[in-house]
Amino acid sequence: MSSLYDFSAESLTGQPVSLSSYRGKVLLIVNMASECGFTPQYKGLEEIYKKYKDRGFEVLGFPCNQFGGQEPGNSEQIAAFCEKNFAVTFPLFAKIDVNGANAHPLFVWMKAQAPGFLGSKDIKWNFTKFLVRRDGRVVDRFASMTAPEKVSQDIEKLLAEQG
Image: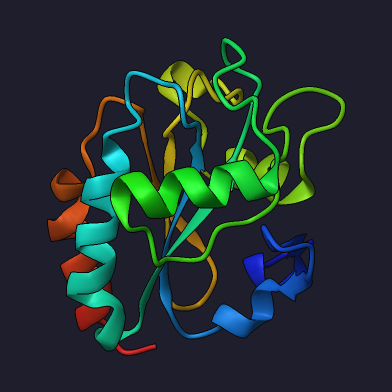
């Protein structure tokens, strides 16, 4: 696979989604969990989604239970939690693995495009963020501790670029 647009994923409602449907948009792709210390980042992610969505920006959320078992719920429970607690309206996908033998191919590819600290490919925790430019290339990777609003300046720069 040579582009983000070559991948597909299952939506939280179980529908296949070709990521080519996001072609030409700036994306922030995040692995998430409902019972994590970083869970309040859902609020910041929703805020930047609302701020930039009309300019060609999307947040794509991928629940993951690989870090401390902090996403134990099924799709319906995850959707209800996100809606009730954070009024999330950005697209959410089915729960996946981001590391190991069963890692979703999208995350395998993104980790290779933007390795973490000291070249590490593994994702260290929930709420790791990958910023993708309009052409489907990964621009940067942000650690869990990076609040969504801290990525705003980078999003602004990519939105200003012609796709």
